[in-house]
Length: 173
Image (cartoon, rainbow, N blue to C red):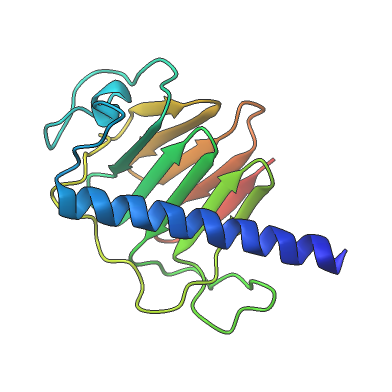
């Protein structure tokens, strides 16, 4: 049981690190990747406030922020990682973590888990991150996230996932 928990923690940390590297590369490199305009294919468009009701299942990766900028997510066919810059809920306990928790949540094949993050908490999303307007959804592979005035909800194909907002978070099972 302990070994499985340790493996899960390592997988979650690896996913978070990869997502953070992608976000940094997109922010510094202007978003030009070799996989095409994944932001546009995910219904988030290239403008600050896209229109439309979401998209069919996209492939590859995409990122978005809610209009407030407090919550930002990166999605791929492997899962979803969302960051929240500011929250008022009690930070969740992550076994073996002596660092900061509560700012990064991951949904993947292993389920929902908060990550242990060292360093400063994430900042509010920059103006270069595409915005997913309230009431809109985007899908990558089997993962769908929906933006709302009370936060974001991300689920997998079976409907399991999480809701994340400044005041609270909850696992959806």
